[in-house]
Image 1: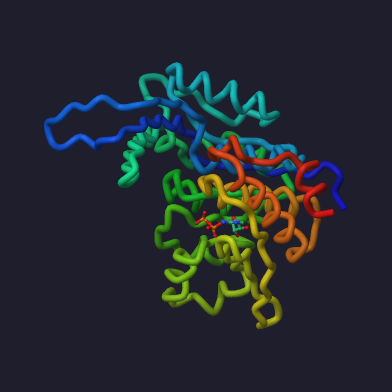
Image 2 (image 1 turned 135 degrees about the vertical axis):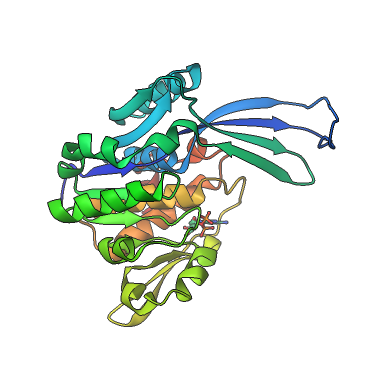
Amino acid sequence: MNAEPSVCIVGSMNMDLTVTTDKVPQQGETVMGNEFFANPGGKGANQATAAARMGANVHFIGAVGDDVFGQTLLANMKNEQIRTEGIDTIAETSTGTATIILSDQDNRIIVAPGANNLVTPELVKRHRDLIAGSDIVLLQLEVPMETIVAVVEAAAEIGVPVILNPAPYQKLPESVLKGCAWLTPNELEAAAFAEDPLYETIREKLIITRGASGASFTENGRERHVAGYDMSVMDTTGAGDTFNGALAAELARGTAPDEAIRTANAAAALSVTKVGAQGGMPEKQAVEAFLQ
Ligand code: ADP
């Protein structure tokens, strides 16, 4: 067992800007809202936070703009003990944001990727040593696909396994499907993979998250289910990100897949009992106590 598991994440960092309102404005209308929150988010940063809280040594490769949101996100990562040498601050670019209008009727979200679109293959190449120094690489699909392709290729050359969380779903190039060790779709994303001509090739790489009921994977041609936990739910935002970060930390530690999934289910289950994506992510000790 590896006492100092290290995870390298190449991904997105956003400032989530949430306003709550009783009334969603119509075209041309201005309404008075209720509360406003600014919280660190982005699937990359969320999963990095989950992995770091599970005790992994986490390096992040990404980008922010030279604005106050970028400074805040960098400070937040440092506070989570995430290493930020792989993060570029890019002039004349905005930090990624998600603007969220939250009402009783629905949620409306606009993502402005900003600097996340400038997480380029060239940036990854400059930080290749961070990939080489890690036990596992964790990716999501909020940075350009050409960067995903480049990371999978570099990790294969170096010999570091890659976990890819295919969210938000996009069709993946063959080199990515073949090159990564694990794919972690939710049930909707898994349904899209089932249509892929390469489905049989990737079947044993899939770890499918199934909400409250847990997750499943296929071993020697047989599907195995790893049960989830019955919790009193406060907020499921970030459950998938918690699962992925915890899974990466455990696999980097050398834990067998079924046991790593059990721990990831527990971490994600604890996260749904609290509000917020990063806000609800548990520390390793809490997950261990829960699993006792
Ligand atoms: P996503 O949020 O990405 O759509 P899922 O809904 O499958 O993904 O959730 C990811 C993981 O979070 C699940 O595999 C499970 O471990 C945990 N989880 C999600 N919802 C709940 C819930 N209501 N109760 C307990 N665990 C949950």
